[in-house]
Image (cartoon, rainbow, N blue to C red):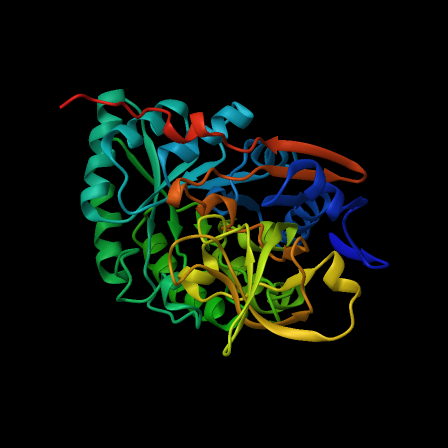
Length: 418
C-alpha cells in the first residue's frame, strides 16, 4: 500500500487530499504518512526477526518529536549523533534506554549526560574518545557500555558524500587497531566492551557491500571472542536505500537469503540503524509555483521552496520526483523546466531540465521522497522561516510542527550598542 496515491487527478496522502493540506497550512509544507512510517519500520523489523535484534531509528533522518514518539511506541530504539538528539528522544518518550550514541566528535559533557540518562551504548570512533568515555564513567562511578565503530574499507557504491566505510572516510577505526583497543579496554575499569559496530554508507541499493563488510567483521568478532572480549551485539548500521527514481532497493528476500545467515553465525544480538528506508518515502514537500520565467535557453518554474527547505538536490545533486497536482496536472502537453527556489544562490534548485505538464503560476507541486533528510537538514538561510510539518493518519490531519515566525527567527539575538 502506497502512502501517496492519485485518486482521479488529485494526489492524496492516505485519505487526505494534498491540495487541501496546502490550502490549510500554506506552502511550503512537509507532509508525512503515519501508515508509511509504521509499515516501513515493521517490515524491516520482520526481515530481521530470525535473529535477536533491536531496530534503532536514525534520528537525524527526520527528528520531529511526534515521529520519535511513534517509533518508540512500536518498539523502536534510536541511533543518535548529538546531545540534542538525545534530548529530543527524552522529550518525546522519557526513555533513552534504547539509544546508541554515534558520532566522531562527542564532547565530554555529551558523554556525561548520556551516561547519566542511561543510554543503551556508545559507538566509539577513536582511541581518545575511548579514554574520554572511561574518564566520564569514572567520575560518575558508572560502567559505560560501548562498541567500537570499525571501518571495514568497503565501497558501498553510493554518493561520495554519504560513503562512510572506506579508509579515506573520517568515520571508524582500522580493524587492526580496533583489536588492540578492545584488548586495552579490558583493563579500563569503567568500560564494558559489549558491542561492535559498522556503518558503510547511505542510500545503498545492493546487498553485496553489506555481505562483504559482514564477512570482514565476522573475522574480527571471532578473534575478539577467542581473546575473551565479551562482545554481545553487532550493530550493522543503516544505509538501506529507497526508490527516488528508478532504483531497485534491497528487499526482504535479499536480507533473509544473503545477510541473515552470516549474522546468525556470529551468535550476537543484531542492532541496525535505519532512517531513510523508514522515512524517505513516508514524506513529501508541497510547494507552489510563484512565477514562470522563460528565456531563449530555459523555462524556469520559480517555487516558494528553496534549498534551505530541501537541501539534497543542491548538496548531493539528488533526484526527487516532482508531480504537478493542480492545474498543470490536467493540461495537455509538457515542457522542460528548471524548478528553482527563491534563495539567492545559483545552486538553489529542486530539479533541473525536468519534463513536467505545462505549469502555471499558482500550481502546487509535490516533491516526492522528501521524508528523509528534508526538514531535518533545513535552515534559516536568507532569513527564511522553517516550514510546518503535518502528519496524516487515515483521514485525520495533525500539525506536528508550526511554521516558524519572525520572533523564532531572531530569538536569542541582541542589538548591542558598540
